[in-house]
Image 1 (tube, rainbow, N blue to C red):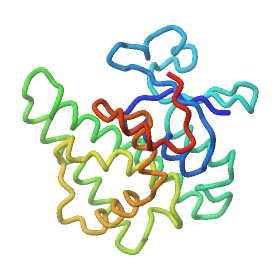
Image 2: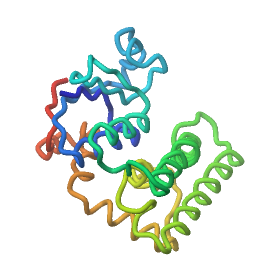
Image 3: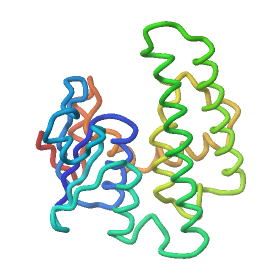
Length: 220
């Protein structure tokens, strides 16, 4: 059994999507970010960085892993799925996974902060992160011209990048004109397991979505 400590954010969704794709049984522990549950002592004991998601794998001596991409990597190796065991394509998957960690996540995350949450209007900062996020979208679009997925078959690299890019409108970064990126996004949107993962846990106002949960047991 795996416990998933999470919240409705891109990093949380990517792990839920992975668990659904792998058809693993897991228990959802909803962390209330607005009320600061991620800063409580018991959560910090699992992740000193105070960020979701975290998993506890009770099948492996209570193994605790934090950081969403580290979790994707672990689950892929645990099951032998969505990450090639060896060869050039394995390293391609890893590089596009790191591309999300070092590029898409930080840049789009800052775009959202300055567009939606910053106390004062900072046009230069908004332009900086908007433009850089769009540039990264262009990089992915170029990759997808001759590739159905980012690296060989569908993999953890696709899950990690799409979990962020799917909310591009919230960052006010358009995808118009990026035909290959939009085709890829539609492919992911049409995967039932990915759709289920986006409802684990449901975003505020989507409590009815809990009915669609696949292999998860919502316990808190």
